[in-house]
Image (cartoon, rainbow, N blue to C red; front, side):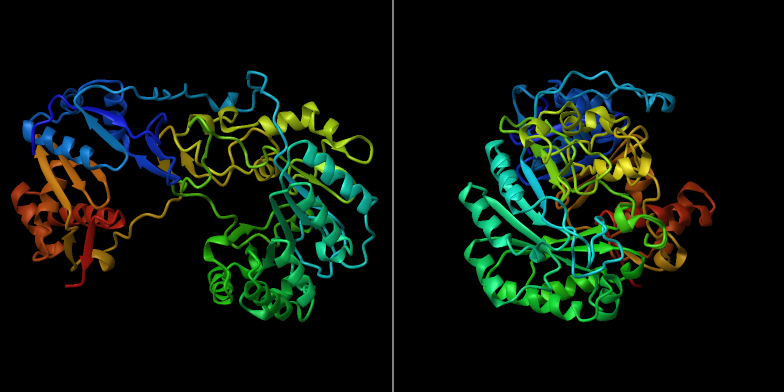
Length: 537
C-alpha cells in the first residue's frame, strides 16, 4: 500500500459524528444505522476530524512504528463511512461532551431557549369508547356497554377539516373499536378528499367482513391489528371474548389476500410474555411483513395499570445501542432528537386533546369548547411538543441521543417527570457501560476445549505494549494489549484454548489457571463481536 503519512480524515456527506463524555458514534443518515465507537476510536476519530494529520493522531495514541501507523490508516481507509484525503476537508464540528451534571441537579428546571412554534403532523381520532372486546390491558378502558362520548360524526368531520387546515396529512382512526362507528366509511372518504396522504384504521379486526375489506382496499387505507398470541387460549384470555382469535386470524388473512397494507401490534405482558416470537411466526405465515410487526410492553394506562400484568422480571430494559431507525435528519442534514409525540395529538371521544394516546393525564384542551387551532397554539401543547433529548439530563450528553426512540409518555408515567431519562435505558454515557447487558459466556463448559478460529479478515499488529486488531468484514478496529494480539495470532484453527493457555503460561511464567481464565474471557468477547469462531474440538 502507498504510504499515507499526510492523509487527513473526513466523513462522507451523509455521515455525522456525535461525541459523548466517554465514547462516540457515527450516524449513517442514508441507511439509518448507528456505528458505536469505543474510547480508543473516539479519541482517534475525534482528534482526526479536527484537521490533524492522521499520522500525528495515531502517534499520540501510542502507535509509534511506521508499520503500525499504516495498519491504522489502511483500516480507516476501508471504513464505509470515512474518507481519507491528502488535504484536510471541512467537517461538521463534533459536539463536545457536555459537562457532567451532578444527580442533585437533574430535576432542576432547565434554562432553554423558547422553541419555535411546531406544526401538527399526525392525528389520532378516537371515534368511540365502545369495543366488542374486553382486553385486560386496554389503555383507554374500552369495552362493551359503554356510552359514546359527546363527540359525534359532525364533530369528527370538523376536526378532520381543522387538522387538515393546520397542515396535518396523517390520521389514524381508533377507539375503542373504530369499526363500531357506522360513519367510519364517511370519515375515511372525507379524509381522502381533504388530502390526507396516510390513513389508517386501528382495529382488533374481528368485525371485518368482505364488504369492509373491499372498501378499505379501494380507499388504500392501512390497517393496524392488535394481536397477542399464536395460542388461541392465551389470546382470548387477554381479549376475554371467545372466538376472537379465529375472527382476527381470518380477518388478517382476508386483508392480506385483498392487498390491504397491514401491520400488527403485539403487546407483551405476563400472560403472553413467552409468546412473542411464535406470534410473529404466525403473523408472518398469514402474510404480514415481519418488518411491520411491532412489539410493545403493557403500558401503565387505563386497565394496564398495576403490577399484575407486567411481565415476570419487570419491563424489558435497553441494554445495547439503538439501531438508529428512530433518527431524524432535517432537509439540511441537521440532526434532531425530538420525542415521539412531537407534532402529534390524540382527540378522545370526550373532545379532550392529549399529545399521545398514552398520556391521558396531560390534557391540553378540549375541541368541543374551543377550535382545534387554538388548542394547537396553547403554550402547554407547544411546550410538550418542544421537549427533546437536549433538555433531558443524562440523555443530552449521550452519543446515541439522536437515534434513540424516546417515549415521553412512558418516561413521565414511570418517573413523574416530563424531562427525565427513561428508566428502561441501561446506558451510562459517562462511563460508556451498559448496566445489565448480557455478558459473554466465559464458563469453562462453554469455552474450554474448543478450537478458536479467527475470522478470515481479522488481522493484527503489535506496537510496544499496544496491540491492534482489524476486521475488514466488520469494519472494526480495536485497541487491545500486546498479549491479546499474541492470543489472536495463535488462533489458527490448530490449537485448542488449553494449548494456547499453556503456551502463554510458560512464556510469561504465570499460573496456568489465571492465564486460561484471561484467554477464555478474550475469546468469548471476540466471538461475541463476530471476530472469532469457537469450534468444538
